[in-house]
Structure formats: structure tokens, C-alpha cells
Length: 177
Image (cartoon, rainbow, N blue to C red):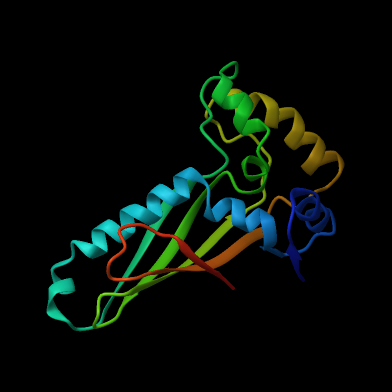
């Protein structure tokens, strides 16, 4: 069973309903796409492709890849302002750390289309880092997964594309699927 979700409450409802997959869309996906870490990684990919020697060939080519992201902000020690800020972000709870697969298509003029696919699991259990996240999630994860029986194996997915014209040096055009 799959479900489309647009917010953390919808994501939790899908998990409590034991959906196998939740496809994140709408405003929650928009936040992920525009998250500072995802934006930085997107701009790094664009820079790498623009510096690829094949760009000068005038021939189409493609570049596959995988990048790890941390969405929702920086989590330092338990009492830091950064951790408190991250704890208030929906992305911190929906998608903490994820691998994002990408596929860059470059046409003969040097225009790029980058297709992104993010896959993660909704698991609110401690991750063993010994940080404030572990402190909070040891209680929260126990209640959510143990008492309320939220599905900790539910896969979360997001897909989107970015168009970059030959003259651009960063992303600014997003296409959502």
C-alpha cells in the first residue's frame, strides 16, 4: 500500500496505517528541494558537470550519481541553538539523512536536466550518535514505534527535476513529478 503525503502529520498517519511507501509531495517536498544542504549539493553537481571536459564537445552526455544529504538543519550538541532550530523543522522528522540518486542529462547546447530521486525510511529510533537527537528519539521512538506501532520500515520517497540552461551557474528552475 502506498500513500501520498504533504505534511508530517500525513506522513505519521501513513506510518500508523502501516503503508509500505509514502510519496512526499507538496510543501514538504518543496522544503526538501530548497533546504540549504540540498541546494548546496545541487549546485555542487551543476559545477562538477559544467567542469566536465565533455561540455566542450558539443555532444549530449549523461552523468549518474548519488549524494547524501542532511535535511532540516544542523544538529550539534543537545543544547545548541542549531539543534533547537532543527528540532522545529518538519524535515528533521520526515527525512533526516538520505541518499539522493541523480541523473544529469546534458544536451548538445550544454543545457542540463537533473532528475533527483530520494529514498529513505521513517524511523524515529535513536541512531547511535550519542547526540541530542538520540536523547529525544529514544523516548519518542519508543512511544511512536513501540506503543503506537508506527511503521519504522515505511519507505519515504521524493522525486523532482531541475533545469539549468547553459549560461546558468546554479539551480533556479524546479519541476516536480
